[in-house]
Image (cartoon, rainbow, N blue to C red; front, side, top):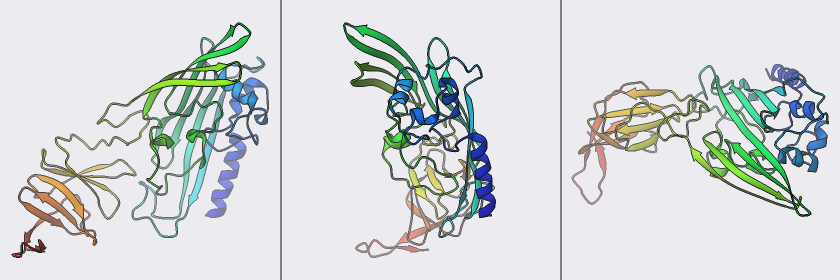
Length: 339
């Protein structure tokens, strides 16, 4: 299995030129007539040399005029994921809890001139784990060259869908390590919002200025996607789409890593798979489920009107019957006992 994965990866790298997204792409080399090492530190980047910074500053539009083919490149990323212990549940449909060989991403990239002197870096990505297409990184620029006395000034407009992807030095979080990862494994949840937390969930426009090739500044604003709706273009689920919620109140994670949501307004409990985005409306005897939690054994405790309801950890279906818990006679201990 490991040898097969390595062979596939090697073949895809040879076909694509370099199998890492958002780094050096052949389309820019075709347009400029320069090798990748002319723009990027270490040839494949992502950090940029002065030539590469100027190319990005002027909106990806410069070139030698010799290439008349569309500036398109195709790259792919594969992985074989093995964890020391199996994951609590498969990361997605069609995958196992461990030892997953996956086509993580297949990217179609456009890099070069567009219209009216503008240029763009854009990615359309197929996610082989979730089996969906998304619009990935997008950065569009239009630059204007001005002479102010003896000073050279470049003023530009930038439109992008990921803060820091427009950085001239390619040194900000959008271009930082790790350069690529797999959706076939659980990733750390702790991260700053600027470190990919807003990627493809926002759109922003900014104005940038380079003064006399010595001082650079940029000012922009971003707007997020509509709240309460799963983004149909990016496929991201930072705003979760779990059906029609009336008055969601409680959140918890079940023993399998799914998100549980109580909605007393609809007298419903939902299970949301954080990996696949699938939503299941759980049928129960709860009347107005509000708060929800899990104990050390993984059992679910649900606050329902004047009762506390218990759901055994072994329950994993789409329906269950909840058993009320009774408070002991000793108010000092406030201990809950099963009825």
